[in-house]
Length: 291
Image (cartoon, rainbow, N blue to C red):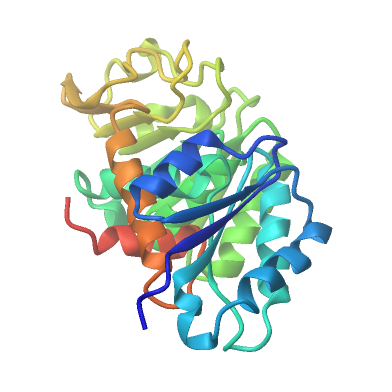
């Protein structure tokens, strides 16, 4: 019997399923792509059952599900609804969560940082740390034993993110900091070895004056591609450009790594029918990749 064609079912909470995610899926080797937009959790069960009951258990590794969309919270709800819709260990498929590129972008950022500094002995500041990408960056840094300060306009939200990280990484060293407090860690990026800005587009998080003289600072990274960038002085295409002994990375500069991780994660889905790829699993896969 010939091998089954690789089918990816794309569940997107936007009205129009992401063209970006569709192109990456095809480039990753998907042979048939079923894309559905406007998905809510209540839509999931019938779609999942359509995917798992049309092939025998031995062939279900050739079917997989990708959950995306700009609403990250809704995508997480859909991701969990997919897993609840499986029937035991046999009637299920592998599934990947990457809403708005948050998981693959965070994985690329932390992987890139790990190539240049020893994260386990570094103090890291994540600006915009309660946003979709920032939360995942902070989690992945904590898993790499970095001491992480999670910055937000709301100290309560920063504390919530730190608590969520501690639930997953009990020995994590994570600390909340408020961007609106003049004496907070968020206003002293020069104290850190690593500063990653994952703030919303158009929000300036670090000025040149703040980082002009910092013997501690080793790496600056801005994950926003829309000007003005959060960290003043970074160029969107920076990929390790050195300025006064500090390495600069922009969103496009880490984009190549993000794309490789995204494609490899899609391909990984078709190795078996029992994989569930969230931020941690995608990052662990990235660590084993060769670039």
